[in-house]
Length: 268
Picture 1: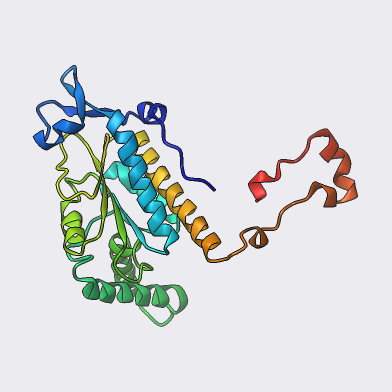
Picture 2 (picture 1 turned 180 degrees about the vertical axis):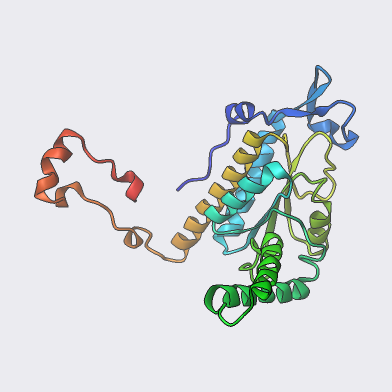
């Protein structure tokens, strides 16, 4: 696959240009604002385009080198898109609540992840011999740990790149990333603080369509990077896929194929 394409039209259709009310702004964002209409700040998408493209190139570079990308978005609108995009691109995510020390105190977090795996093993494979009350207690503990750690339980270490939606809400996560020199891609609304964001991307961080677009683009960049990394390492991607040749189809299917050729692109 190729690098995801981002255009002014996509951003406009997603509402990425709408900021907050003019009285709810951070003066540090002034250089990224086009102006104001009806007391709403308008984000300058002519700056968003090249900045987002630069961020996508970084995502591709990290993925191609085998690095880990961590999606972070705990606000209600972002929880679904963040989890879906991270899973689709085989990466990691935090979409419920950021636990203080998730990165800077990884040893403790690793212990909690080990406990989560232990609970999964007990409840999924060997629940017999335990009372209903005990099983309920263990189930509640697993659900609590799953909410906070389920998206990073397979990460195996600190990430190489972090993608953050709503830098104000995820300020603690960004602080931890800065301490560990982890590059941060941040979606910056008109009330955001751009300080400490390695790859700033001015844009609406509340609209559901905009959040979906951002996550999809990052996920596509990861997938492109993973494919590029496999090619660079000598993996034959074509050999890993079983192509469907119409000429090899069963004779019984030939007439139907002549009337309406099957689209085999979805199988490749």
